[in-house]
Length: 314
Image (tube, rainbow, N blue to C red; front, side):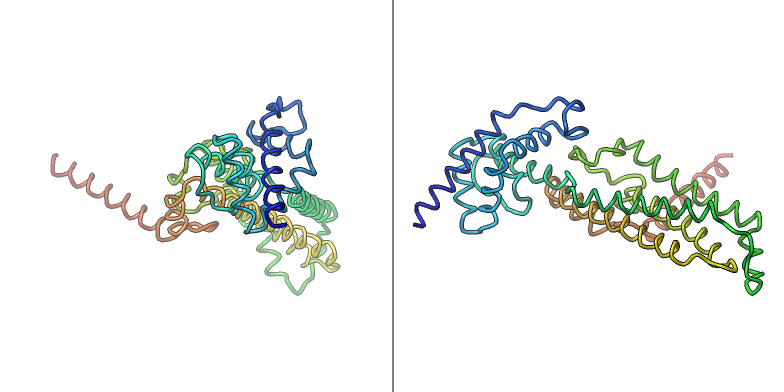
């Protein structure tokens, strides 16, 4: 029975690989899968076209006793990049040590593409968090009542003063501009579904691994906290909407955090020890004060040396 099961599993693996090889590359963005790597679109097309075959092989891949048989059958069927790519897309956690170098390279890229393509449930929760946060913020802003509780007069005068408003606006604008500019310059904005071709560890990425998520998260928190606090200081605060705002932000940030974890797993598979070294030395979200102080001190020391040499020359 065990031999017959292994034979059936190997046959399923070969059928899956042949089906993938016959799947054409989707013409983005006219097809259902757009803004993705062409290989990712092709893999998704194959999964949609052959759901039973893909599902059966996926379940077999979860059995540690059958993984080896599936990989060996894959090598026998197509010991090249395409064969490895199709099998790697089924499970992002398996370590492949069989087949040619191209097969193993394709297997790793298949795992990377699996991690880069967000699950539907994760996307839905992120949209739900965004919608709830946005509606709550708009409601608090539109129904803002300038009838404040007299007990908080000093705090209210400070928060409603021109200096506090200017400081809040500058802080929020600077944070958003910092994150967005970083992603535009590095061409990473909107490329969540595409694999990275190089590991960027310079510029803002020297201080934290996710400058965009950090800046947007801090900016959103700053703006939401200001509106929520101003509402709570009124004579009739709207507690349900403030609670909905907090829940929406929690769901939204959880979705971004899960996406960050998947990206980190994908980068670790792509760049190996190079990324692990960078990961150990650089915080995920908040900037490294040590790196900031070190660079600032180096800049000042260099400036002083340059100024001193000019004086000596004069």
